[in-house]
Amino acid sequence: MQKHPMTKDGADKLQVELQRLKKEERPRITQAIADAREHGDLKENAEYHAAREQQGFIEARIKHLEGVLSHAQIIDVASLNANGKIVFGATVKLLNLDTDGEVIYRIVGNEESDLKQNKISINSPIARALIGKEEGEEVVVQAPSGEIDYEILEVSYV
Image 1: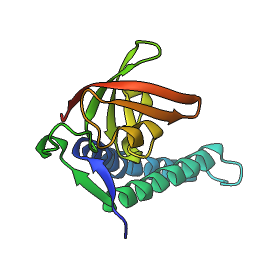
Image 2: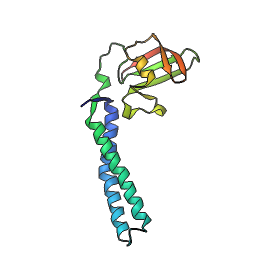
Image 3: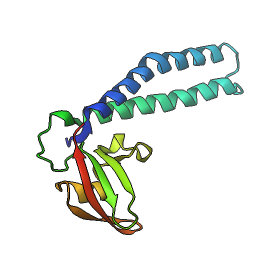
Image 4: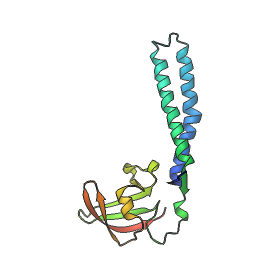
């Protein structure tokens, strides 16, 4: 069974979501189904059908999270000694050499990637181009929109 890398922070967040779903959402939806059943004919009971649909989503999410966490290889980035090289979990400050714009990315696992928070998947074109490189190096990223040239300004392991 293949393990998938995940930061400790990402695993903790998924664990919190899993516990919330099991301890809060699951009992709430079970009660909503019981309440809807008391209203009689289930064929025409919209509340019952909505609650059952929501129950399906919750149970699917619980199963998904349990699967992800059971196959996670949790990596504590702060304890890594990568000697300045970009590795999984590193935070990287880049300079786009074409636009002079700076961007900061953290390289994380697939389940925790979120571009709005500048967390990119280890499998993304940018992360693949950066892995193994060091501060001061230039990299060319093969992006869907074409090649992007970056200079690595800073690498940290937070």
